[in-house]
Image (cartoon, rainbow, N blue to C red; front, side, top):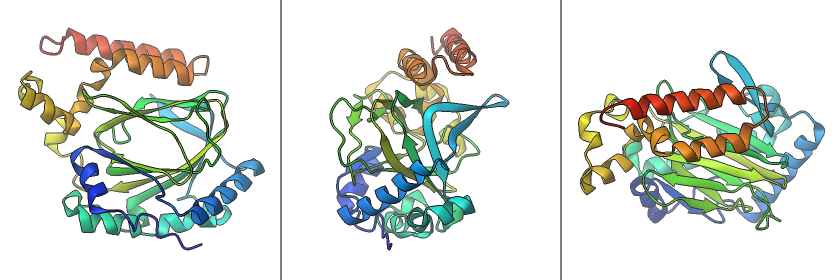
Length: 286
């Protein structure tokens, strides 16, 4: 199936992505393409071959309950999911973004991109607050989440929640063909517990321009309380150094929703509490 994913991105949408940090686009996929990808995803999910979502904390690997993911860099996944493999090798989105936002310096080719299909089985499966690019050595610049849920209803859960720094949060339902694009290094986000099955795929686009020294090194000027400085840090990746203290309660609640009772939860909660305590003990941060 030919994809052309993202080729119709408009200048207005790209401006929102650049200046606000995120944009929601309905009908990002045609109905036919979204339905075809959903059918492929459902068939593979039902086969039992989709790997459980794993992540590393400290030196150990853990699983997120009820979440399964297929990484399209895996040749076995490419063979089983040919439609999603086309998304990996299709540069329509990055080419269009480079046309509209050359300052992002996005790189072309499958090595500068990641694509993962995700199956959330429900039963409370969710993701805690996080940045997709938490710092070096990640090169992720833009995240594009595309949803494949034609019968989603209010109460099903699984909404993505965007937390632009020091601004009002935005809750986005995971409707069929809808995409959420955001800057990977400056939009904190989470996923609400899902009580119904939820399907999506995510495209991450790399750039060599992310995680420069000015993006990673917190200085005294970032801690000024005047309106101009507060606005500036909301648009700067250095916010990542402050977010867990600023949103300490929200981080903890989202971690409990995602991992409570699962292996590794107590260690993760303790690490979060210690991190916040260290930040609050700092004379300028506390």
